[in-house]
Length: 371
Image (tube, rainbow, N blue to C red):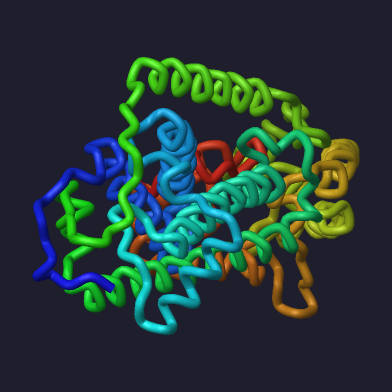
C-alpha cells in the first residue's frame, strides 16, 4: 500500500471518452432501474430506450477497450486468475500494489458489469418480443415463454444492482485505504502518481480506428435489429373486421378485437345480447349468428399476443368484463378514477382513448398515451 506522502506528480489516467462512457452508463442504468423496479408499465418505452442506450454504450466501450488510450484498454487491467488471486491475497495481508488504472479485482468487476449488462439487455429483448410482440425477437418467441424469461430478466437486474453495490463499496474501500478520491478521478481524469505504483506502458488512442469499428458494429447491429423487427409475428390478431361486426358493435362502443376473449366468452356475450351490460343490444337471428361465428373464429385462441392470453370472463365469479379481470386491475392500478372519468376517456372500458392500437388487438406498449 502506498502513502499520499509518496506522491511524485499527478498524471492523466482516464481519457475523456472513458469518463463520458462511465457517467452516461451510470445515468442510463439508473433510469432503466427506476423505470423497471419502481414505476408502472406506462414507463416501458423509457425503460427500453434507456436500456438500449446502455447496450450501445457497452458496445462502444468494448471497441474503446481495444483502441483507446493506455488505461482504457483491456490489456491494462484484464489479468489472469493467478494475478487476480495474488492481488486478493496481498490485499488481505495489507501490502497490495497500488494500480494507477484498474487493479486486478477492479478489472474483474468491469468485465462482470459489461457481461451482465449485455446479457440483461438480451433477456430484456426476449421479454419484449415474447410479451409485447415488439423488437427483434418478437418473431421467434411465443407469449407462453414470457413468464420464465421475465424471471430471468428480473434476476439478472437484481444481480446487476448487487454488482453495482459491490463496485461502489470497492471504490469507497480503495479510496479510504489509499487516501484518494477515486470517484473524483473519474471526473477529472487524473490520479496521483506515487512511488511503487503499477504503471502500464503508454498506448496511444487510435480514434479513427475506433470510429470505423464503431460505425461498422453499430451500423451492422442496427440493420440486423431492424431486419429482425420487421419479420412477421406468428399468429397475429386478425387484421380486418367483418363489416357487419364493425357496423353493429361500433354503434354503441369502441370495437373490441375478437382476440381479447376466448371463444366461449364471445359465445356467451352474443347469447345474452338482450341484457348486454345493462342495454338491450338484440339483433335478428341471422346477424347474431354471423357476428358470433366471426368472433369465435378469430377469438383469443387464434392469436399469440399478451392481450389474447390474459383476459377471460367468469360471470358467476363477478368477472363480467375486461375491466373486472385481475390483469386489467393490476395494469391500471396507478390510475385514479378522475382520469377515467375525464372527457377524453369517459369510461374504463374505452381502451382506445389511451391505447392507439387497441382496436387492432396488439396493445403495443409504445402506443400508449394518456390524454
